[in-house]
Image 1 (cartoon, rainbow, N blue to C red):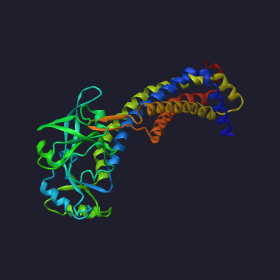
Image 2 (tube, rainbow, N blue to C red):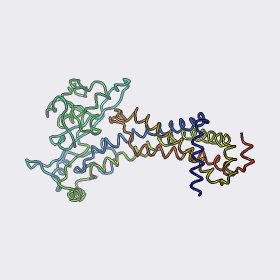
Image 3 (cartoon, rainbow, N blue to C red):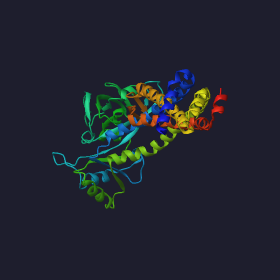
Length: 387
């Protein structure tokens, strides 16, 4: 009986929405703005996460200086890199050499293509096993750099973000011009970087030690063997992590900070939408005074009437959230973007749309709570006196 009353009262309310078009649009537009802005900002986090995940090959382990948060701050001496490369648990190439790559990373000045402002671009070095250790690495134009020569290759998305890093362009480093002889792709964050030969780059940028050592594990179980061998070596002071764990740790602080900013902005926008929802639902309840009086006279209790008000607000809010999500998806999903020196594609996913809908429902419940309670308490005479 109660369920039938709720369905009947809600149906009546929804059918009368065209008569309250502008009040209804306030809820739809307000919720749509909140959901659209929320998803557009979350698309940055999701795009970076997915690009990082594609670089996090679980077959690889990374070695860095102990207690270092950022790779460019790590310091691995050449002697230590040699010990790491010969540790047990590392996979071997066909010639019997360990699949290990000691590399460096620096940031070089660059110019953003969209507005010409100065930025920093990642420059990473590869040894002879560097390309082998990067999942999905392959050349799409030009050729690979030649060891010993002042040559660079650029990621497939680098030239879209930064000016002057296309095939045939020259990058100025401390010891002169380095031509870009090839374009590569990995499907990850490396696609926005420059890459050159480790042995040639290090003296050019005045690097005397490596920043990290990347290795291919012989098997998943070999990680413990490899890590224990380095941890028990008194000449080393390093941290050893699986590649996905390192990427997760590196993104943790950024994600926490950016998530706080995103939801803070969404909360501020949501506050405005909340007041709009409250005013609209309050007006809707008053405009339905005769309808509510008739329902009460027919024996309907206050609960179905209150729930119908909340459900009406939820329907309008969900509609607004879906519209906002559709606009965010159309404008941002798959769009190339950059954050700092990283280049990636913005991404809008179904779970993000669900978050937008959840925010919309929360706004409807909070904004419609007081009007729904008012409607539930009304007697027939109260409802008839409403506007």
